[in-house]
View 1 (cartoon, rainbow, N blue to C red):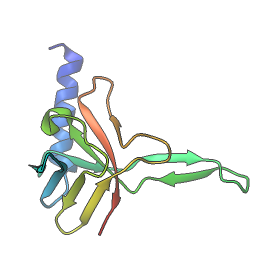
View 2: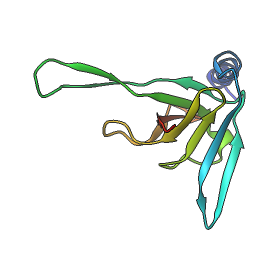
View 3: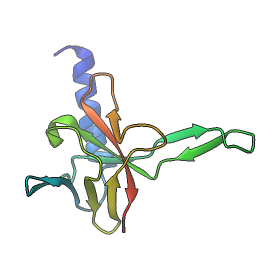
View 4: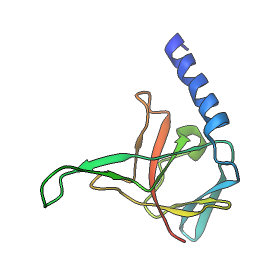
Length: 124
């Protein structure tokens, strides 16, 4: 592992420690062949928000924020999230994985492709 990879691994560990939601977080994958999957993400993800910009029809530029993003290490989910999967955050609510403003519902958050940035919308 080179020095940059070590630094990135340290950054991920620190972000998970300091920026994780205060309560329990669960990721629920849509059932495939009748079996859904739930993964406990407590202390293993953090919350973010994406700024999207677009030009409205009435003239000047508009800045639009996505509702809520979850940043999750790729190794924790074991595969990319799918549209309509859900994050449930205790005391906050349930958020459904959905695409935002022409972008896919997730993207890699780092050049090394070790973190997913998952776009969600509140569902409760």
